Image (cartoon, rainbow over all chains, first blue to last red; front, top):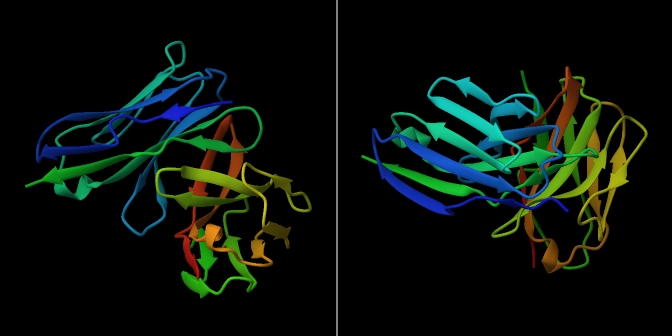
Length: 111
Length: 114
């Protein structure tokens, strides 16, 4: 059974700092890994999707990497802003038709 | 572009009452999903539908039923609500495109069972 862990559970950084969020998984047989953002009381917004054959994806200030051999993915946020404050979730699609989610990292970017 | 829509946004039920959560998507996706989100538990899959006319159990199906009414709509029914079903419910849809299985989520329904 796939298990997904996100550490730390919460993170507070000053504005402008570059930061890395971590996602670890136990089963490397995956089709893709998806990073989401969730604002309080809202739904999930897809940020980046990395296919199994890819090593990284970039969108603006966000860069996500995937290392299947070590069971890790990282989400790099450059020059963080208060608007980046949210909970970040990673989710993996393995065999079958569902995603397995981590419990998320709650990020707060302070002025 | 509406994406995935859910109704209602909020609902309070008494133990034993029934209700149906509605979900619709306008992206012509074949697959649709129902998740629940609880503090410290992450999102857990309740049921999914790989295509119109098919449904399958997920990780936590007990106490729920689903109907894939057509390609656009996928409803979740609680026949006899229990306090343990207090949660936030999310509907999602996806389509496999060139090896990508990207899921898109609705805004959620916040359900409280007293």
